Length: 395
Image (cartoon, rainbow, N blue to C red; front, side):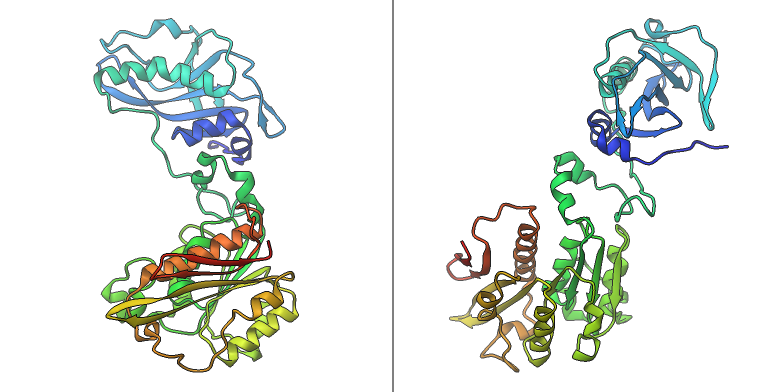
């Protein structure tokens, strides 16, 4: 039988274990033990090698308690000083033993101290062992920052979101947990919205677009598609779903343009980003969403050539149950081209798409309590010429 790794929930809930993980130690828990792999040490031939440090782990529910013993175990040859002599100060005379299926301790170590927590205990031992290795090779470290995969039912992410845990904002970001988000349109702005939302813990991201990912899309979307990829003419939804499914679960694709006869595809969504062209279909979509009480953000921009330079507005409009009337007057439903709109001419303005997406996602996160929201923003318009942002809100 092999090692039985348990859920990583105790790591997320225990500050000392989480600190070990965030600092890059390769830790694992299971069968009542805490393991730290890839700990550098010196062997008797004065060569740098790597071993595994092990401690019993005392949990109260899913939270680590204070260590109840100063003893640790070691898998590997005996650690030595930089001169090749054994580190005898931590040596214990116990024989090798099998601690758990797949885990064998070659040595038992005893460094007596009143350890505050498991971070204190494990780093103390590693300091004595790896400190000798660092004397011969200052670049060696036990902080290897391993990739940490997750189980199917453990997280929407396929590997742990260590960025959130390192920043200590897990409770705040968890306010998005369970949400089902729709993105109507995967053009420039819609694709950047996907890039941002994919890195949140929402349960589902539902994509709607019936178009092909063409060459001009490459210049106003995240990433860098190859010539071969463009020649294959992939559908936008399948292309982007394949990219972001590398890091997360819960992406649903609908290779179709939203029309009144398929608006049922929106059922069950908690929020929608509307990234569609102006027109009657957009009007019908928004009427459908409003009638069902679903909040949404409408994005858009109007860019024109003015004295040989680009000028215009990048805007977001937020429509919720409290802002329907205020938002309605800012949403454009004009048919066809509106003036000399240079955006429709495929000008490469990826930075404006990214800005528009960032404005929308920040506003969405405000609605769900991630960011502070004192203005209760309904409309925001950023002027390229002045660099100013005009905001209309309820407060």
